[in-house]
Length: 225
Image 1 (cartoon, one colour):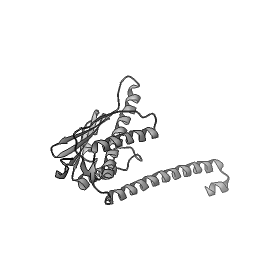
Image 2 (tube, rainbow, N blue to C red):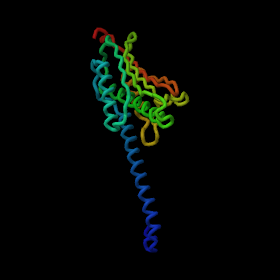
Image 3 (cartoon, helix red, strand yellow):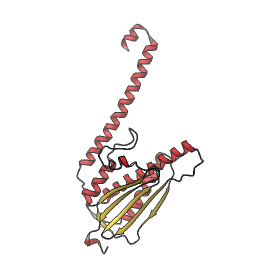
Image 4 (tube, rainbow, N blue to C red):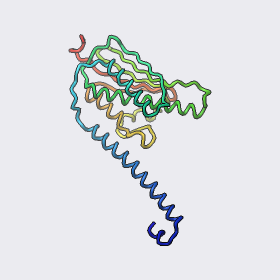
């Protein structure tokens, strides 16, 4: 740029300046992405400092469902989806770290809302208003023997079988570059399995739906709660 300024070639100076500006924007963008990945890695590796306490999972799930929905609406007021909740009224309280399980629920529900929003956008783009697609996220709780089951289901585009087994791997993401670090589900998996002795599984029908299931053990001392 200095050489071109000395030559007096203002058009070339402007072109170099435009390239420089674009490069700086890319550096900033990827720097922020690297920062978010590092933060995610630190969260992934840190030991939870939370304490397990008897928790009403119906109330916790309902709270994070509404938190996720209103959080997305605050970012994009055009976002809209139907929320369905089916809570087992006889669900016992169980010992969990509420903020950690809340974090898992928030991640799963955010992903579900993201999925239905993506499908709604695709339907509108391909078919205008010819198809009546209703984005829907369904949350349910159920007691099955000595386990509590929490399901987060969406009627989004689904997950192809080829990548389904990879979604809990660190840094794997199906989102476009810059929109996901690939650590959310990995962290959720560790919280459920290592932190609470439960399971986190996924099932999906490509083009139709995805369901994530959390199973948490009910401690014997909680059965009367």
